[in-house]
Image 1 (cartoon, rainbow, N blue to C red):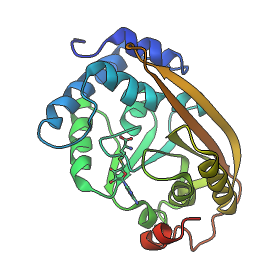
Image 2: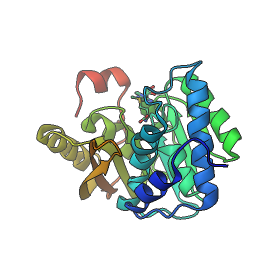
Image 3: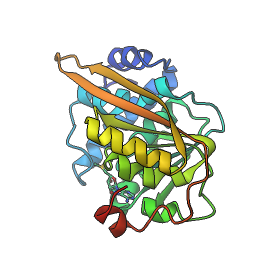
Image 4: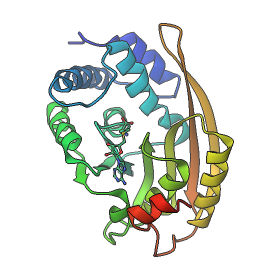
Length: 243
Ligand code: SAM
């Protein structure tokens, strides 16, 4: 029973990005929003607690990725710095056939993610690890069809976390607020150096019912060469000398 979020807002907003949600998916989004708000009383998961804003700022914002990247059953997707499950869980609800891995360096929010997946009866790998360590693990390095991330770091740092995990021909697509020219230029240079080329740069708006408009950007890279073995460097080197 949909009793928490507005299904119209969710369905219409998702359609703008080419996502047609099934009734089951809409029900799962409703359950996820409710569970997020309940658990947020006990642990700090999100500052966004109004159901309408959860729909626009967490769900539709995450699903916007579907306009830039085609999703398919069996696709191996990695969400870096997932926090309370964004964009990973919305992508999994909309495309339950993907093989999703969500990582974060802190376990507290990942315990919530694991509980939410049980609640939603969905399956994903949830791993407490730093992105720079994960990228040096031979079992996962250059294995993902898509690596994504939202609100984790500046672009040149994100590409160092993410491109080592992309398979050849795979894609990296972070969800960002509109980038400054400097962040975009440095990020593209770093991405080229780590073995990828720019495929697209999508700027889009997410309108909210109260008249606010969220300005967003997705920058899409494709892996075209192996990432040099020494990348990602350790966290302190990345922080001291971002690419
Ligand atoms: N992606 C979520 C979202 O959009 O709501 C969470 C964003 S939160 C601002 C940033 C998250 O990135 C935090 O949960 C933090 O623990 C994680 N993070 C930061 N640096 C990381 C790293 N090097 N490896 C893994 N996770 C990291």
